[in-house]
Image 1 (cartoon, rainbow, N blue to C red):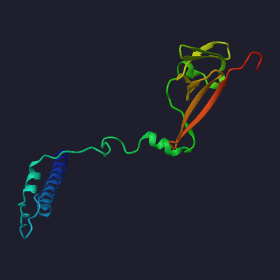
Image 2: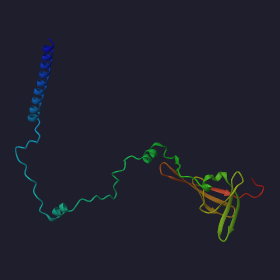
Image 3: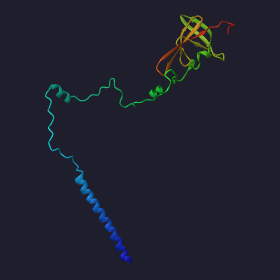
Length: 187
């Protein structure tokens, strides 16, 4: 009985293998006839395009291709940048702040300083300003004050500071601040 069982198993396995091989062979033959490996030739052979006989066209074939990049965007940069999307999302009249580190007098806004002295020597003009703690600083024309301010002029009784701000829409806004020298006893 054990022998018969093995025979029945081997018979069923051999039938399974043979049926698989038969199906595989038929599918290969059908795929060969249904899907030819080379494209079919047209019934009428195509005629080659007429050759250009002018001298200009024959010269263009011998010149290698050269990509001219003037007035074209860089093809390797993304089309949408973070800067462009940030500008579009906000209010066009909103003032944008630059992300630069502030140093020296840029740490103080003009309203945090008071003008305590003016000096002119050898054609150069100096001004002395004081912060809320009483510490004094010397400024000259061109000194940056605050995030957007620059000292424009130093006159005998005041200092003119020009603040330049830029909006999201690209508009520049100029604001002028006068720091007036107060006489003793004035507040």
